[in-house]
Length: 164
Image (cartoon, rainbow, N blue to C red):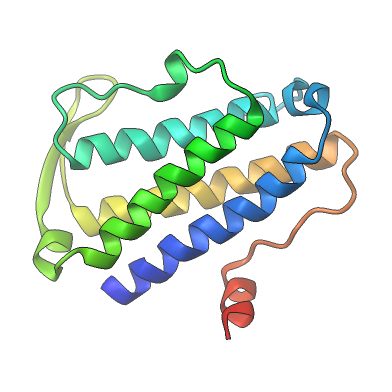
């Protein structure tokens, strides 16, 4: 289990970086352009991805109150991208050093609606990486709506092949 989570952590960074490279090459007006999507722009989608990774990190660290960084963030896409990748690297470092006992530990948390839940840490971490995959797909769709023709492939199998 730990080896797979380590792979997912590294893959998460690789795939996110590939898409961010394309986004960062765009003019700011395209990064902020509103399109039909869950978070209606590249910027807002990346901001949500950072909020999600940070929120789960804080829950795992048993913070009394989860503070989503996007609530007050006013930085550029460059700064936002750096913050998301920095958070993703924290996950990668944590997973690499985690014991099996830490991964299997059942932790408790409250969601944004103040509902109480319990789950093993490894399941939550898997959710974090799967959530990133979902929103990277949305970013690709937004890029296409903005007329970007060349979008990177971010499949796990491609990362595995390139890793060899």
